[in-house]
Structures are given as C-alpha cells and as structure tokens.
Length: 581
Image (cartoon, rainbow, N blue to C red):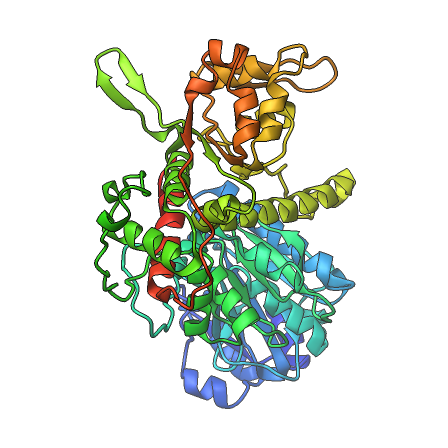
C-alpha cells in the first residue's frame, strides 16, 4: 500500500524522515542508516521503486513527531473494538480543549488508530496500556527509535501535512487518559505488618472486604467520568483533569498524580489508603487500629487463667457460669472482682448477647417436629444503685460498639444517597451511582413498634432490644391501641410472622421475627406487672428473671488483665460477624 510518490516527497519537504518497507513492514536497506540521517528525495525514490517496496513509513521523534498507537486487534469482536475506541476518543475530546484542531488521527489497516502530534519532549517507544488477560498492549507510543506506516484514511481534518505542536499540558492529559486503560492487577496488596495475625482472616483482608475505597478518599477526590471498567477520579483542587481511577472489579485505586498523601503508580486497596490517610504509611499502626475496631482475627497472647473457685459464694451465685468457656468465665469473674459487678447479671447479659449473635441463623431440633429458637427475654431485678446497668453494659459493650459503627456507616451512606438524589438526570450520568442504603443496626433501646418492624425487615436475622429500664416496656403492654403491643410481643416470641399495614406509606413484613430483650427493673415495679392478665396470658412466663441477693461492695484496687478484656471483645464481635442468615 504505497502512497503516491508526489505525496511522499511533500512529506520530505516538510521535514519527515521517510523509509520504505516490505510487506512485513521491515525497512528496505539499513535501518541504522535511516535512524542516523534522513534520506534525500533521490535516495527515497530509488527504494520506492524496489520490487520489495510495499509501505512508506516515517521515523517518529524526527522533527519532534510522536505517535500514540491504539491497537484494537487485541479485542475479539468488532463491537468491542468500536466501543473501546468511541469511549477513548470521547474522553480525549471531553478533556482537551479544541482536540480536533490539535491532533491528527489516521486509521490503520489492522483495526487501529494513530494519533499524531509534535512535542518538545519526545519519549522512547513505550507500552502504555495493557488490558486484563491480554499480553499485547492496546495503547503504545512511537517515539525515539520507532517508526509508523503512512496511511491515507485520516479521520480528522488535519493530515500528515498539518501535524501540530501541542502543549505539555495537553500531552499530560493525553497520556493520563491512555494510562487509565492499563491493567495493574486486581490481586490483594500485601502489607508489611510486624504483628502476627491468623492467616484465615487478617485485619486488612477483612477491612478490604467490608470497606469501600470511596469511604476513605471521598474528601480528597471526586468522580469526573466513568468508563466501562473504571471510575475516573480527580483530586480536589488539582489542576489536572484526572488524578487516577478506581477499578470496579477489585475496588482498588490507581493514581498518576504525585500531589496527594497516597502513593502514585501503585495499586491502593482500602486498607492501604486508610494507612496513608490516618497513619502516615505505618502499616503496623494501621493494623492495630483496625483490629481494635473489630476487623480480622489475631493470634493473641495466651491468657493465663486464674483459678476460679465459686464454691465460696455458692449461696449467693446462682448463675451457672461454669457452662461457659473458661475464658468467658475468666472475664466475668475478673469483672466482678475488679469492678464489683454482678456475676448473675453478667451471665444473663452474655446469654442475651449469644441470642443476638445467633438470631435466625440456627435453631435446635429437640425431636422431629419440635424446634426451638434462641429468642430470650431477660429481666435483671434489683434495687436502685445495685449495679444492674453497669453489669449489663460490661458484657454487651462489644456488640454496642459494633452497632454504633453500623449506625455511623449508614448515616454516612445515607448522606451520600441524599446528595445523589439532588442531582439531575444529566449529572447522575457522571456521578458514582448511589443506591439507597439499608441500616444494619441490630440493637435498639427506645423505639416505636412501627420503626422496630421496619428495621427488622431490613435486618431479618435479629434485632436485639436493650433497655436500661424495662418498666417502660411493661407499661406499653397495657396500652390499648389497634394491634396492641402485647399481641405483637407474644407473636414475636413464638416466631409468628408480623406485618405492618399502612395507608399512606410502605407496609412492612417480617417472616421470622427474632427480638431478644434484656433490661433492668426494680422489684416493686416488677411485682406490679407480674400479676393479673400478664400472668394469665403467659407473658410473664416467657421472661427469665435474675434476682440475686446483692450488696454494694467497697471500692477495691484490683485491675483486670488487659488480655482478658481484649480476648472477650474480639470473641463477641467475631461471633456476630461470622454468624449470618
């Protein structure tokens, strides 16, 4: 496919260094000579009429010409080729002012394109972008030491006769967009952490699985465009049109920009981003931090259990904590000995915590046709100031900690959803798609029945009710209203489906209600509700009661072993996270 000789000579007059190549695009004559000195018209014409001559080409870098070679034959279908090129070209036009007036583009014979321009900073031949599962590059540059074939089918008004110099800024944008298509890998990023963690679930692996990169970088970057596989992001306050992108499949970030706290030209997982944002790149400190938040499973220091002798207080201690694992017993006993808390109340709280963790995930088959769930209602009875609430909090606090985190995550995601909904249809095309989030709150205190049913509908495994004072819960049973509270709670304890029909809002339905309840109550208040209709209908019989003989202990200087505290917190949080419907 030789171009006309007259056309070739015009290119030589304009400063091109031309070559003639065979049907395999190999230069005829010495390639080294071609690189060292441009041929004259006579020398070129002599080779032009060689019987082997099939193509005319030009040396890149000569006369400051650089070429971006887009090779679409790496795609299996014509549709994939057209989709890629259309998206790529549109990104260039959207981000480079007057793109069509600055760049010359020719279509190649191998289903590709050459983008030509002149620059003072010509680079060597570079493989810029390689797609996933492809060995050949989809985008390369032709610069120093390279050459391109001269074609005839230009798709822009500019031709080889009109190739123009572009600014360094325009070249930066061009190369940035090209680099966006380079596959850098979707494997997990290995972190340098000195702590020893169990290989089954490291804190950073757990964190990467549960946290989106957008949660960490949303204050630093904004999404400015979307491609088929990536979200293109720009640093807030940055002058470049793009700073990098985020892979949708792996959820990792890749940055070109050096003007951020994050490393550039590296795959950045959510944990790695968290490490640089909050711990200045210290992975050990970041691992400790997220571990303390409940991520991952770690091999902790072996706890030396102290002998537990309950015989001394056998008359007072009625709760059989010896049915629990030794480390759980240790935590309860040390909490009692150091903080003066009630072993009985804490034993009840631990049962309630297990009930919340298990939820609808498991039930027990006593015999064929007889199954029981782990739903528990517990009332810890005692006089004011005896330590009911502190004892319950001591056991439940890891779940409360996780519950608070879930509420904060929901509030953050809901705020994003509200902002997204404010956008018009056109703006939403270029913004990250935000779905209405579902609350993962699983512990409530004071809440209306309507709100409780709505929440349980989105969290079908369990909603635990923890009330400092059960008196309010009891009082609601005696209120007359359509679909009374008493009927609702009796049905939920039996595992019967519950529904809420509304005239003006979406109705709610829970197939398998699972709502364990715990709280404290004073003896005389409890007696008021433990009689009459509440006794006759079986409501009181469904409640497990703990009413030990207690007194307020004097202050002591005993201190709980830190490993006991940490081990208990880790156990309960991981149990909740591992058990799911």
